[in-house]
Image 1 (spheres, rainbow, N blue to C red):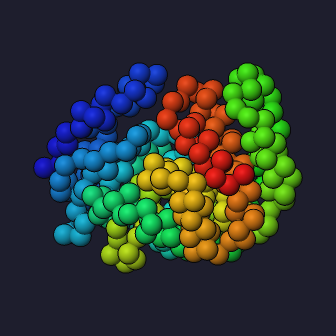
Image 2: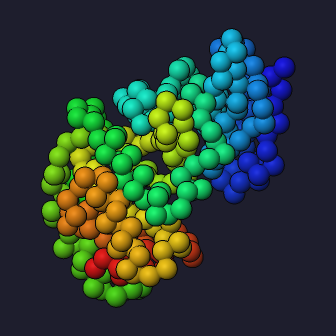
Length: 294
């Protein structure tokens, strides 16, 4: 049987209020069709993230996960990223249907992520993962961290003014001071642009494997800020923040000063974006993170 039941928590996500209801309504049938096409049998309850479901399946007795997500350009980018890394620190990709938003993936332990590991172990592990994914020869079409920094720097001051100068101008100045250096890449290796504990699951081929990586090229330290701010509530002081930053940067084998510049720049970037989007929890985290390192 390939009947699936979509979790109520997935059906009730706010994202479906602004689009995707038709895809959601067709999802059970689309999943059954994909199982039939790839010879899969549903093997357990459906799990989900913010925009995709993960269905445990088997084929000829071997375990896999069928991932179904709304079709669009992001699906092609996800497939390209997994094909590029080809299981090096990432979940293995076995089958794809980009048009249907379907991927057949290696099965990992979805109940165990780096989120479940104490922050003092998780941040060094994320640093090692950043280095593990830093492969030479990324695709020329992958977005450049230098270009991303240059483009965002051009709008930071205007956003700060538009929001009424919502925080001390010293933080804005620190980000703008860092921007020229970050706008020239220190290297040209593959970079994961979505680094955080929830995206790294327990594997068997390797102890930890990344899911949903975003393929960029340039500086390894680009997304270190996210690795920190997503665990910041577990860091009781500025000294603790600096200690975890140092541990992750050391394991990632990146220059400390440049990594600090990336963290400050990205923290201010996300701080302004979060305020503009009406977020209430992440802007204070960005404040704490920037304060510890400025």
